[in-house]
Image (cartoon, rainbow, N blue to C red; front, side, top):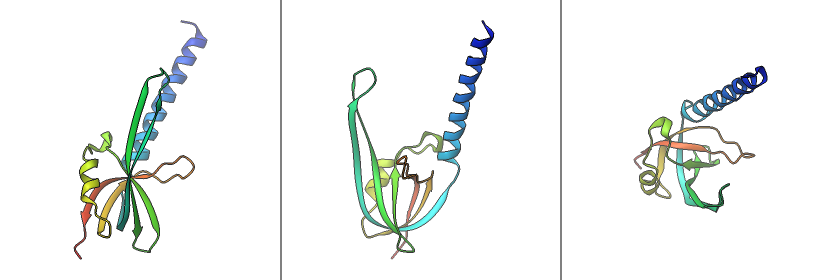
Length: 127
Protein backbone atom coordinates (compact mmCIF):
# COMPACT_ATOMS: atom_id res chain seq x y z
CA UNK A 1 0.00 0.00 0.00
CA UNK A 2 1.35 3.39 -0.98
CA UNK A 3 1.97 6.07 1.61
CA UNK A 4 -0.73 8.34 0.14
CA UNK A 5 -3.25 5.48 0.34
CA UNK A 6 -2.34 4.87 4.01
CA UNK A 7 -2.81 8.56 4.83
CA UNK A 8 -6.16 8.59 3.04
CA UNK A 9 -7.29 5.45 4.89
CA UNK A 10 -6.24 6.88 8.27
CA UNK A 11 -8.04 10.17 7.49
CA UNK A 12 -11.25 8.32 6.60
CA UNK A 13 -11.11 6.22 9.78
CA UNK A 14 -10.44 9.34 11.88
CA UNK A 15 -13.37 11.17 10.26
CA UNK A 16 -15.69 8.23 10.95
CA UNK A 17 -14.56 8.11 14.60
CA UNK A 18 -15.15 11.85 15.01
CA UNK A 19 -18.64 11.57 13.49
CA UNK A 20 -19.54 8.67 15.78
CA UNK A 21 -18.15 10.40 18.86
CA UNK A 22 -19.95 13.63 17.96
CA UNK A 23 -23.24 11.79 17.39
CA UNK A 24 -23.07 9.89 20.67
CA UNK A 25 -22.13 12.98 22.66
CA UNK A 26 -24.51 15.28 20.84
CA UNK A 27 -27.57 13.12 21.17
CA UNK A 28 -27.09 10.91 24.20
CA UNK A 29 -25.46 12.45 27.24
CA UNK A 30 -26.79 15.95 27.79
CA UNK A 31 -30.06 15.29 29.63
CA UNK A 32 -32.13 18.43 30.13
CA UNK A 33 -35.38 18.56 32.08
CA UNK A 34 -38.34 20.80 31.26
CA UNK A 35 -41.79 21.31 32.74
CA UNK A 36 -44.11 21.90 29.78
CA UNK A 37 -47.76 22.13 28.88
CA UNK A 38 -48.54 20.38 25.61
CA UNK A 39 -50.08 22.64 22.96
CA UNK A 40 -49.98 20.29 19.96
CA UNK A 41 -48.59 17.13 18.39
CA UNK A 42 -47.81 16.13 14.81
CA UNK A 43 -46.33 13.31 12.79
CA UNK A 44 -44.04 14.59 10.04
CA UNK A 45 -43.61 12.27 7.07
CA UNK A 46 -40.96 12.67 4.39
CA UNK A 47 -40.81 10.62 1.23
CA UNK A 48 -38.69 10.47 -1.87
CA UNK A 49 -36.14 8.38 -3.67
CA UNK A 50 -32.82 7.35 -2.16
CA UNK A 51 -29.51 7.41 -4.02
CA UNK A 52 -30.31 3.99 -5.58
CA UNK A 53 -33.63 5.25 -6.94
CA UNK A 54 -35.72 3.29 -4.42
CA UNK A 55 -38.79 4.95 -2.96
CA UNK A 56 -38.27 5.68 0.74
CA UNK A 57 -40.54 7.07 3.47
CA UNK A 58 -39.53 8.20 6.95
CA UNK A 59 -41.44 9.90 9.74
CA UNK A 60 -40.96 11.40 13.15
CA UNK A 61 -43.19 12.71 15.88
CA UNK A 62 -43.12 16.38 16.85
CA UNK A 63 -44.39 17.81 20.14
CA UNK A 64 -45.28 21.49 20.62
CA UNK A 65 -45.41 22.94 24.12
CA UNK A 66 -45.10 26.00 26.34
CA UNK A 67 -42.44 25.90 29.05
CA UNK A 68 -42.91 27.21 32.59
CA UNK A 69 -41.95 30.72 31.41
CA UNK A 70 -44.55 30.72 28.64
CA UNK A 71 -42.00 30.25 25.86
CA UNK A 72 -43.01 28.07 22.93
CA UNK A 73 -40.76 25.04 22.50
CA UNK A 74 -40.70 22.21 19.97
CA UNK A 75 -39.37 18.71 20.58
CA UNK A 76 -38.82 15.62 18.50
CA UNK A 77 -40.04 12.26 19.76
CA UNK A 78 -38.07 9.50 18.03
CA UNK A 79 -36.51 6.22 19.06
CA UNK A 80 -32.89 6.44 20.20
CA UNK A 81 -30.64 3.39 20.05
CA UNK A 82 -27.94 4.93 22.26
CA UNK A 83 -30.46 5.44 25.08
CA UNK A 84 -32.38 2.20 24.41
CA UNK A 85 -35.58 4.19 23.81
CA UNK A 86 -37.96 2.31 21.55
CA UNK A 87 -41.35 3.57 22.77
CA UNK A 88 -41.86 6.80 20.81
CA UNK A 89 -45.36 5.82 19.68
CA UNK A 90 -46.38 5.05 23.27
CA UNK A 91 -45.05 8.41 24.48
CA UNK A 92 -46.79 10.26 21.64
CA UNK A 93 -50.09 8.61 22.56
CA UNK A 94 -49.58 9.34 26.27
CA UNK A 95 -49.14 13.10 25.76
CA UNK A 96 -52.44 15.00 25.94
CA UNK A 97 -52.92 18.59 24.81
CA UNK A 98 -53.45 20.92 27.76
CA UNK A 99 -51.77 18.60 30.27
CA UNK A 100 -48.50 19.45 32.02
CA UNK A 101 -45.51 17.09 32.03
CA UNK A 102 -41.97 16.91 33.31
CA UNK A 103 -39.94 15.75 30.33
CA UNK A 104 -36.32 14.77 29.91
CA UNK A 105 -34.76 15.50 26.54
CA UNK A 106 -31.38 15.00 24.89
CA UNK A 107 -29.70 16.79 22.03
CA UNK A 108 -29.67 20.41 20.99
CA UNK A 109 -32.02 22.66 19.05
CA UNK A 110 -30.44 23.93 15.85
CA UNK A 111 -32.85 25.86 13.62
CA UNK A 112 -30.48 26.01 10.67
CA UNK A 113 -30.06 22.21 10.56
CA UNK A 114 -33.65 21.47 11.71
CA UNK A 115 -32.40 19.57 14.77
CA UNK A 116 -34.69 19.26 17.77
CA UNK A 117 -34.16 17.99 21.29
CA UNK A 118 -35.47 14.42 21.53
CA UNK A 119 -37.87 13.41 24.31
CA UNK A 120 -36.50 10.49 26.31
CA UNK A 121 -38.72 10.40 29.40
CA UNK A 122 -42.16 11.76 30.29
CA UNK A 123 -43.88 12.12 33.67
CA UNK A 124 -47.31 13.74 33.98
CA UNK A 125 -47.63 16.35 36.70
CA UNK A 126 -50.85 16.00 38.70
CA UNK A 127 -53.24 18.91 38.41
